[in-house]
Length: 208
Length: 252
Figure 1 (cartoon, rainbow over the protein chains, first blue to last red):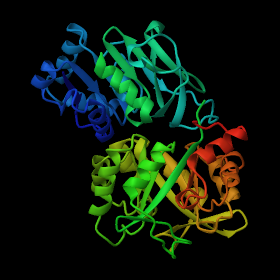
Figure 2 (figure 1 turned 90 degrees about the horizontal axis):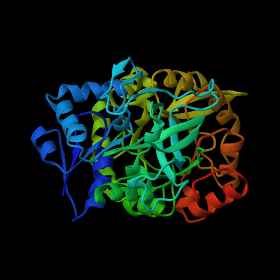
Figure 3 (figure 1 turned 45 degrees about the horizontal axis):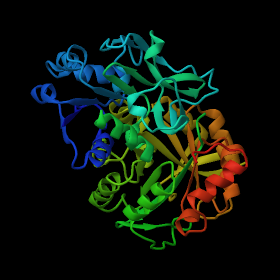
Figure 4 (figure 1 turned 120 degrees about the vertical axis):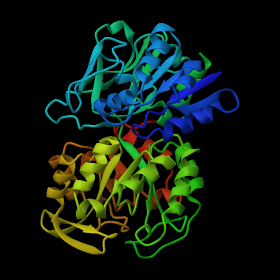
């Protein structure tokens, strides 16, 4: 199996590479690239994302043909894709970080700043929080409800269709922290930084 | 709900772990990669490396340590010490650090914090503030591992780095560091109330009660300690079980 981590020159993806390398050891052929041909030939794609919604979308758009290639992969051909953090957020139609920015529009919804109740909750939401599983998701196989995952973000994805939500976490309100829609998977938390349980999420994705 | 984090800090000099008493008396106590792995396996919520000689010596040593550690530890890794340029940050992040902590360079030029958080995202920019009490309810920022006085008010500076995009503050009391007499709770309380970003308490931990005080009395989102874990007085697990028994929520 060929799995590609999309390197679109935005943010720090070393930890994503390290953790996938650890889990993939000898089982999966892992590529880190923005090469469109290689992406098209992959069996699965990982779309990481750090920094702001706008900077990530801008960086994706800067690589000619990348957005169309990803769309063809995930939407037309319905092959498995995992978005992590801003990688998940970009599934939305629109994001409001830095400036109003159009997202990929794969899962209808918006990305807004977490309501911190006038400073009652510190932002960014940094650290370990429990996930509350809302529906069965393939990437949560053998993962217990209320498992701890590592978060670092100030914005949240609010999908229109609530049935895509596979888990939420409690921070000032129920924040969407994982989605599954057909072949599309996304986590707001960082499985690559969530210790053994995070590696299990990655393993589940690689085993799909 | 969000858990309070326990962060063991490894002070690294010449590729080896040390812990200074008031930054002077250094003891050699182990290989940083191995130590980090032990901490991560025993439930540390994050790992922090502080390169205490980075100001003077070449940076390749710490980068190599980060590279090795990041391949074995799958919890967040923060690295600080001598981070002065965008290139320093790029090198550390590429080696596998998740966050970098900026100290002297942020004091010299707060625009550096802005530039760094814009380029890499606030999530990976920690500003380390070393503060020393100068009078009742007044603390001043010090740099160069506590050697240089700056005349800058610590509370004002904390607000300023928040405005400029810092994602977290790592707050060390220079009066308490190495004393094992507990965090400077007044300092901590003042800074956590004046800012809206998470504050990591540092400097002075000698008992598990000190960790409790840092979180409950000081309002810290995370507590950092070095020697109590490092010399085996307490295990990370002991700290977590103790805090949990006192109704402080931690990741068990």
